[in-house]
Image 1 (cartoon, rainbow, N blue to C red):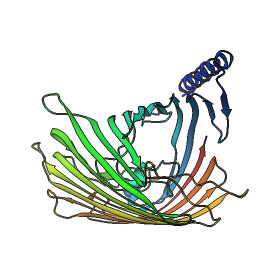
Image 2: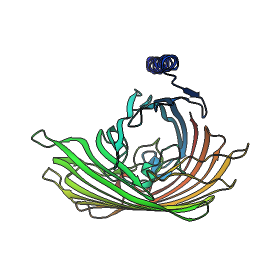
Image 3: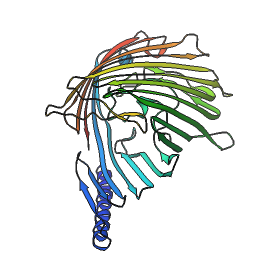
Image 4: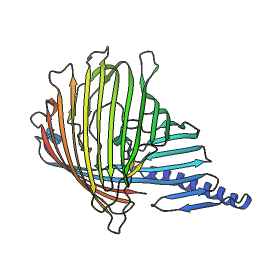
Length: 407
């Protein structure tokens, strides 16, 4: 850990030094003007010729207390656990008007506690159709998934065990917008291989629009579709933590041989000042493969969420990419948000007699103490059916807390 932090610090200092030296030389020879800002806690350097560089990051510390199905291995007794959920440092910038880059390192990024690359991409913005992106970044699927973990209204995202989520190892994508419309297309290398050693790929697309419905109010509608080739004789498990990250996965199937899959997503949201409503529906169909344990698998899930900011602020929104953004507190006491979320899902595996079903209710309160500090408290109530893994512990309660600092 100490070596990792020292390395990241040296990289950051070297980058700042190089930019400062270049900017100073430019100011002398070409009258280049630069601005240095620490607004928000990070460091931002910007010149008048389109070059920029910024250092930022996030720290999230979570505490969970739970019982029932989340602790099925100990007869459902009450237990607790804590973790640094995310500890990330981000470097990003632009070169002129056409090029941009971003790299995020998660210092506690894997189960062994070592650092790993969370995001790394290069973007070209010189095309009229949009920007071309290449590297590791979020796949274009779903409103909640594309919204940063810093600005979702519950501590964890929804529990749907689909196949396209998070950040695949490699993508080539086109992200564009025009007026109220936005669209994203991607070819994804899933880091799987067929028997002949050739790579297996996914294709994904998302298209939507945001429309004003009055002063300070708008509606968001979008749809996503993805198709994935898993490679010959691929095996996949279907599992979810049901909203509590510090525990194992109470819903977890056997390994099944699957060949390919299609995934469909529909999403909608309405924001009316401090009131925000959003919901999503997702369906994924997996076709049986030729391996030792083949099975068709159908996954269906949905959620609906309502939040209200008591102090009058609105949730931020980025229309060019169709996702929610930060809440900016207006007063010295910060912004207070109440949130309620209900989700359910079904996992239908042909090789098993009964469908696995789950329901999850989350109630929460969020305090945006400042632009940098956010405290979250969630209560979760879960109920499941036909989950052999948890035995008689088919339901459970949990309380989760997060302290977040963003810079």
